[in-house]
Length: 174
Image 1 (cartoon, rainbow, N blue to C red):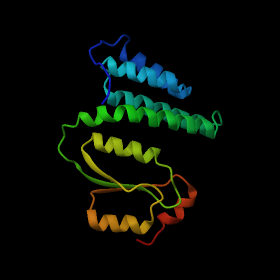
Image 2: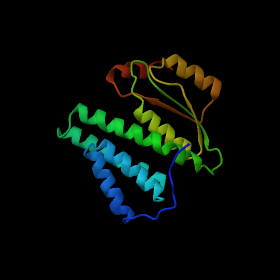
Image 3: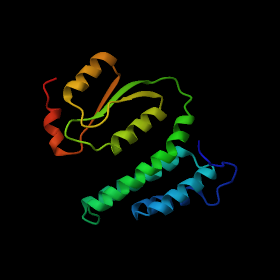
Image 4: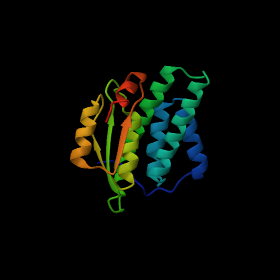
């Protein structure tokens, strides 16, 4: 499924390489950061550590957006980089599951919102920590959440809402 060769030893100190990877994400260097991701996987750097680097890069981009250093295009680009990185890392994070089942989580994005990057990243982290995840998608009616909860009886429920238009649907009288 993936062509990563893990036989090579790391060429630089992991923390230095991770710091450089974070900088590439913050500087929105899509091709460079994904190439470096693949190289570091080949070198045996733990996938969870690499995911952490991309997450930290995203966090820093968010701060720069809040401070007016980046605009919406920067957020979109960072989201694209993060999505591509999680696509690469997912098989490695999910292959290493050795924990017992930790419970079931129901996830979805509320009606009037179609953003799913955060939801998908959260689902990946839950999977990597032994949770069964039932993802019911985006633009989901409040009633659908209620129906799924009644049928599945999940241990956790996660409702994503990025746009203010979705807030009114979170006030639904459950």
